[in-house]
Length: 320
Ligand SMILES: C[S@@+](CC[C@H](N)C(=O)[O-])C[C@H]1O[C@@H](n2cnc3c(N)ncnc32)[C@H](O)[C@@H]1O
Image (cartoon, rainbow, N blue to C red; front, side, top):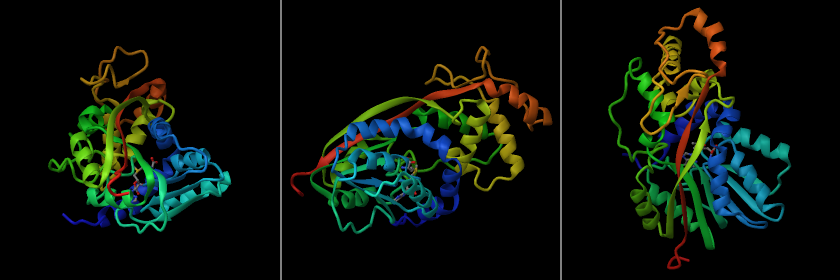
């Protein structure tokens, strides 16, 4: 496998980036609590310098800039042009002059400055060579600096991923099982592997804490909004990259009526007032389903739990 991130650069500029910009409000609402928990864990203080790795459209980066204040400094680094453009707009509107963004690969970026904190909200799982990337990030730490990030636990722990993918399986050709450690959202699902990567990169005092958070998909909690979001971003969206509109609509319908029960959840998708039994399958959707009945379902609740992993480590005293 190639050790450079060319594939990810293409993916985050051509496919995922524009989708994340278009769906920013609901994506931010979805993952903000996990990013905030990592910010609390990192405890940035006024005057500190912070690097946000894979900052994307910048919601957490702006919050970090507010925390360090005008006497601090924050750099948001990302490979995605469209996502950074959106982040820059928000930073300008917020008047945060201590914040700047650069488009560059964190695995190889030549840092001409050092940071008290290297932070990330789901932006560090996409490196072709994670050890080299974290070594590069560790080299940018100021003496005594710390690294704190949140990544995902496994697909099996995250019903919001595996339930909709199971619903899609009947309608979309599934790729052969991939290397679970390949760059992607779940590359760090194996905590012991992650610990080894961080230690090999020269980081010390590695702490990994499972972090669970209630998750409301789609922003407004409606079933249709949840389905729309699952089709737009994340692993299910990747599988639909080349799908026709017809297939997308069929998949959306299958997800709306997918089984509600999941062994790791008390309930995943539970139409309001129902007993939790799956709705009857309706593929392809009728006009009625697209209109009236979809609106009738707007009271449905799509909620689950997100299972992330909080990682914290420090600059190793032997390399400082
Ligand atoms: C799941 S998104 C998270 C974005 C943002 N942190 C947030 O929480 O909204 C992952 C981000 O990592 C970025 N990314 C992936 N590989 C990268 C790399 N090698 N260097 C810098 N950024 C990278 C992507 O462009 C994308 O913005």
